[in-house]
Structure formats: structure tokens, C-alpha cells
Amino acid sequence: MPMEPSKWIDVTVEKNHYSLDHFVIPTHYEKDVSSILIPHGVIMDRVDKLARMIVDEATGPLVVCCILKGGHQYFADLVNSIKKLTTKAGTSVPLSLEFIRVKSYRNDQSEGVTISLTENECRDFEGKNLLIVEDIIDTGATMVKLLERLSQYQPKSVKVTSLLVKKTPKSNGYIPDYVGFAIPDEFVVGYALDYNEYFRDLDHICVISEHGKKAYAV
Ligand code: HPA
Ligand code: MG
Image (tube, rainbow, N blue to C red):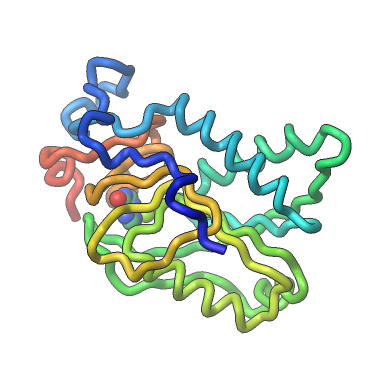
């Protein structure tokens, strides 16, 4: 069931942007981002809560599927957080980990979606509870395509968590089961979200500046 908007943290309001002076930014990116949308510490605290919700609603072992590359940081922190929770009696959820490569963006524009999944990998999904871990739902096109593909392999259940959901008129209406933050219709980078492979080494989630878009355009 898609998550109700009342359960997201909405950071679309302008006043929620932090000045670059308020936190440490790697000097090589100082000119390339215009504001900090979500500081790293807030991301980490929110990930703990998402882990709690996922564990509370899990009905059995989970196959946690990381959507590469952008999802890797959220995936790693989420899995760590779930592992910490499940060391307590009564909440134990066995995890296995899978990795799916998806590509669709060039500069800040979505192009055709390519999904790298072999038939063999897909056959392993039959009868399993899948948890798809994504960094961002923007138009929703990538996720709808991926879910269509996965449903062919008869998993027992499929849930999706995305750290971010962009409030954009280009959305196809898709909403994941577990959402971290709703963000404004701007191109964001950091915490493994990239712009042409740059900015994955930035811890905070930031809005890219015009300078940044030009500097790293392809
Ligand atoms: N930033 C990085 N990657 C993305 C975005 C974004 O805003 N939207 C879709 N992929
Ligand atoms: Mg990306």
C-alpha cells in the first residue's frame, strides 16, 4: 500500500533549505550546489525510522534489492539500521541482498530506462518477499517499468522504499510503500545521487547550482 503523505517529511518549503555556510561542504563542490536540502545527520535519523517501519510490517525473510548506483548509500545505511534493530528478540527479519543496475538520466533529463537483470537472477525472486530500495522517485517511469518486469517472476510480495519522492508535474502518480522525504521539483545531488556520475561523494542532499550543471554537463 502506498505510504500516506502525512507520514513523509515534506522539505518542499523554501525555508527548509539550509545555507551552505551552515554545514561543511567539500571545497571541490562549493560552487556547484546552491543550498543544502537535507543534512546528512537528518537523513541518517530518518533511515532509522524507515527501518523500524519496514521491520514492524515484515511478514518473513526479505530479499533487499539495491537499485544501483544511486540507491547504494541508502541501501547500505538501511540494511545496517535493520540489522541493529533485529538483534533484539522478537523483531528478527532475515535479509538477503540483491543488486539491480538501472540507468535513465543524462544531465538532468530522463532518457529511456535500461534495467540490467539476468533471467537467472529473476528466477530467484519466485516466492520471495522483495524490498526494492531506490534513492529517488522522480517521474516514476523507472519504478513502474522495474515493477512490471519483476512481477513476471512471481515474487510473493514486492514493497518499495525510496528515500526521496520529487513533487513534480511530470509524475505518473506512483508512490512507494515507504518514503523518506518529499522534495521540491529541483535536481538534487549527494548521498549517492549523481549528476553525470558526479556528487556521489557528497554526504548531504543538496540542490545543484547552474554553475554545477554547466561544470559537469556531458
Ligand atoms: N537527482 C539525481 N538523480 C535523479 C534525480 C535527481 O533530482 N531525479 C531522477 N534521478
Ligand atoms: Mg542517477
